[in-house]
Length: 125
Image (cartoon, rainbow, N blue to C red; front, side, top):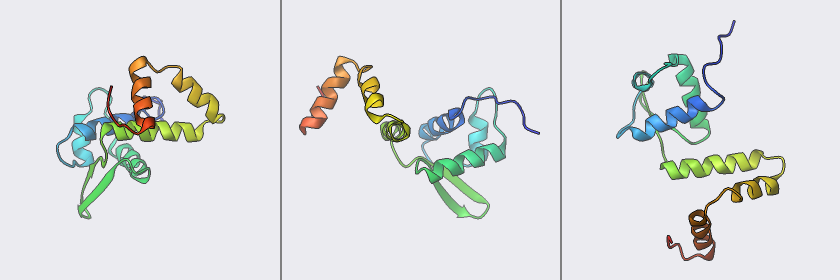
């Protein structure tokens, strides 16, 4: 028997990544559990989500011993966001439509930043 869904699809993974980014050092699943406000996920649910994030390359598992496992993010928040966008683009049925929809929502600063990146100047406007 399964319980009622308390989060949207992917929401737990997003919350975990945010909590991990806020930590100055790797943390255990129990420590992560204590950081949640509101609905606290079960330990086994956290471990499942952390394992999935590890497979995606978004979390690093650091095993100090079989019973002492800690987790951290290997990338900065911007890199995670970029990986999420690439993943969404890879899953789109119509890649061109997805790119055009995304580009249509960019503001002038975003467009200038992309133009700078494409031109190879690397300067932020």
